[in-house]
Length: 155
Image 1: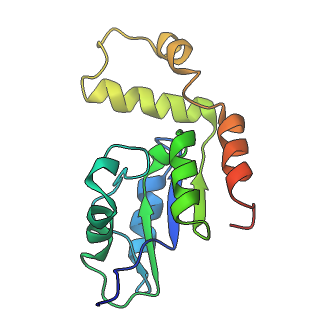
Image 2 (image 1 turned 90 degrees about the horizontal axis):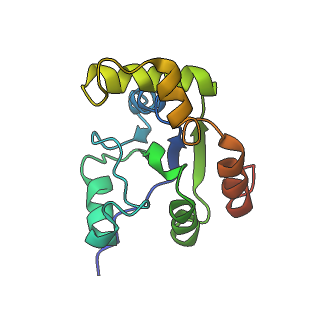
């Protein structure tokens, strides 16, 4: 029976607009690291969980050419307690890179991101957006506590 393609050694998780794309792109430049070209596979948060583990393995195996480390970048995992628990169940030794940003700076960047893509009415003021989004943007403490309840800080 042929060996199963490997799963990830590390995951880049964190807040949206907190440099996870930059971090994934930078690590991709290292010859010993493989990160799929498709960022945000979102397997563990449930978006593609129904496709099964073979689908996830295929996304990771495509393009691997003997690199020593395989990673994936899906910031959405950080905001999902279920995703963190699924990661721990399947990959208990996986390393996590948590990328965070000052909550106000993160919210401001996210505001402009949504505004520029027409996902907000052009008349939306940042202060109104921030008041509405604040429970989701920032408040990293509870999310980080859950990560640390599942994974030791050294990981």
